[in-house]
Image (cartoon, rainbow, N blue to C red; front, top):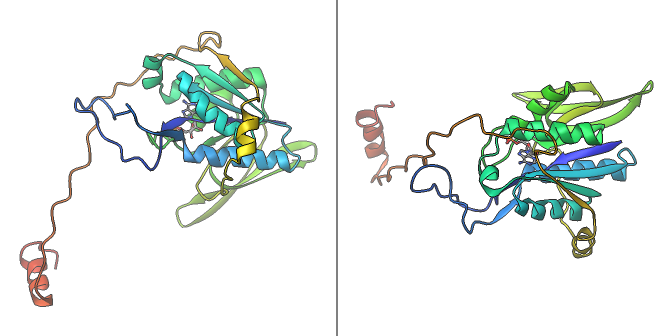
Amino acid sequence: MKVLVPVKRVVDYNVKVRVKADQSGIELANVKMAMNPFDEIAVEEAVRLKEAGIATEVIAVSCGATACQEQLRTALALGADRAILVETDAAQAADLQSLAVAKLLKAVCDKEQPGLVILGKQAIDDDANQTGQMLAALLGWPQATFASKVVIADENGQMRATVTREIDGGLETLSIKLPAVVTTDLRLNEPRYATLPNIMKAKKKPMDVLKPAELGVDIAPRLTTLRVVEPAKRQAGVKVADVAELVAKLKNEAKVI
Ligand code: AMP
């Protein structure tokens, strides 16, 4: 069974993002980029399935500009067998929306016929939390989102995934037929680090480059971003001399007691 893992190039989670002066988006010039953290978890899960003898091949896919090759190489260093870059130009990459990505991934699935697609539950740049769900709908496949545990097994000749999901106040366990779409939550696993020998080996692993037009997909944006603004700054606090003053302020100024 092939496992497909879509990985997105996003601003590194350690970077403090800055909004552009014209409020059209965030500043990307000279900003450190990385693989979306939920996608590292997805790669790790797929590689563990291969190590367990359940997956036969792990394919990492990224949609966007040429620079996404960096994140694909990281996925290869973490254990993916090969990679596919669905390459757009830089302007298209800047506004590549979830629906367009889901359509591109559907076209890749039609070509590769994976038994399982594992995506991150959301990308930390746009927090859209849509691509996996849209992909499952386009494919007509079952989906289990926000997975904190995935067990794949053959049940009477039918491969199924038993997926535990973290929901408000508890855990939900679903059983879905493969092929299916699963999205990863934070606690699914702890991704390994890429070792130097594996980073070197990854340079020789195959990477195909496809264009959206070759896949017959229209990636034109459907949504318009009106503005992006920073959160309101917190007001400075005040120091109080004693508890009596604190209580008086809470009562008379904040009026919360
Ligand atoms: P989102 O719906 O944008 O929050 O993203 C959810 C997941 O979809 C990500 O964690 C990735 O696994 C996948 N994804 C989103 N955008 C891309 C992209 N441009 N290339 C590859 N995978 C993507």
